[in-house]
Image 1: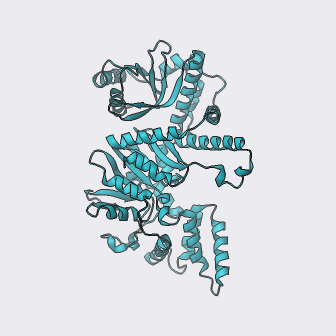
Image 2: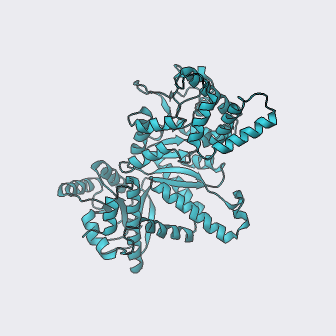
Image 3: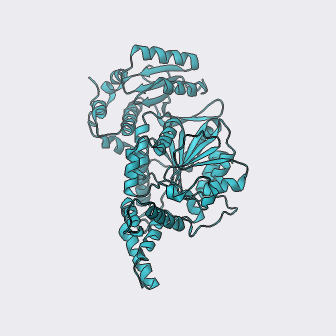
Length: 504
């Protein structure tokens, strides 16, 4: 009889593949952790191992001692499924580990493996890794026999939240240090030196140039709507703009619909090029209205530009996927090296890409239109309104979706300046996690009591417990999408972290 939790997990159609992988990992690790405590052993989760060639690789866990007849230390990786390509990648990574530090590699797979697969994976292991580290391959039948029937917690049942609560409690009682974030940056640095990574960029990276964030963009567009009311005093205009911004602030997508309708000429057909150009022109003006020119200060985009230029054909940054309309990154690259060729992609094209690609998957509004060959603001299709987001989610074969999907499946992705609130990106992460060979990373701001109107009047110990709980819940939610969080305290820290990753 299979473990009831795993049965319920596998049969639950309301949970995405990425969430199933998340709960599978958490469940197995909680079971192992309880068993190791009874044996006076230690289980270390999300274990980072340094390879013989100074690369760092992260695995789900390591058991420090021998366990249930398996020679330790035991390195553990947990998968919902496994295919030959993914197994080959795992074997190649394990091959580079110091043989005296790891005795056994235990791969747990949440499905039944047939004899042919066992034979294939054993043969690959023998060829790639050799005899230094023994392979233990457990499918769902082995897991049921070896773990679930003997050690599972019968009280958990179908309660997925209980698994999360176990980890939230541990997170509150565990002291997080800057060292853990440095380790994550070190892992990314080793990836940067040994293979190709992809950067996903959001509005946060352009903020240092005084470009508006979403709420500020809404405020600027609200002002354009209010200007339609004649004979307003400037104070009245300002107050009405603030009122409209407040009314629209709770739902950004509906706000975009409202503002596009409000700014467009209602007498014209909504789909006409004239209306679209009028709205996009307003958006362009607001985007660059308060723009501050580049300085010697090491902004995030400057560091990213240096990382791009220093990349090689085999290592470093492979491409940029940006959700921003602006071309500030292209400008920074040009400032550093005028001869470095960039290809800006803002529409579907069948031509081969020869230069470094920057994909604008939500559309493109460059500061100077004339700087880009074959660019026309009338031909742009910006992802801004509810309809545009809906159409994008429906269009699975859209070039915008394909380029994001490919990166999420094939590459390690580092997200900078993003909050991951984009519904289409979240959907793509959930859909690709099962097929992705690598986890992805996001740089996120770690909130402190000084930034709050409420926390600074509460007892410091209570505040710290709340913030640890808050950050741990965020981390676990991102992990469900296959995304690891790298926390930073101040926005100025982002450039420092990026420099560490890019070895600048």
